[in-house]
Length: 92
Image (cartoon, rainbow, N blue to C red; front, side, top):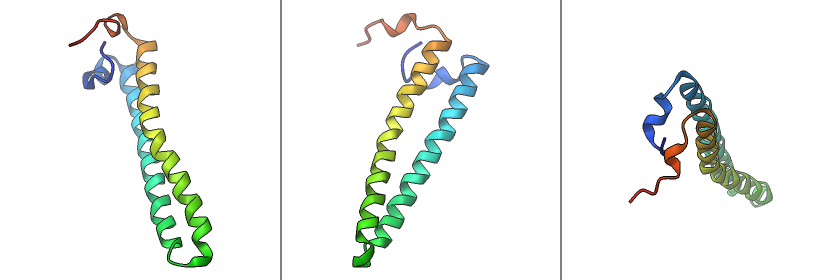
């Protein structure tokens, strides 16, 4: 099994379930981050709400940083389930 290979999700029913859960989490994080950025942008139109808008931007940025972290965790979950022999093979 190669890391980040798109066919990994179809190796077994358990792989499909892991993929589905992580896609759901990824989508929730994506939508949440986008929403925080939109609301933060709106809050920047009024000087009295700029502080709150800044916090929403920060939280949205953290969520966008969580996206690749979720992919790494998903790949680790795949490794725990399946064959990980060829992870160690050096690829060109």
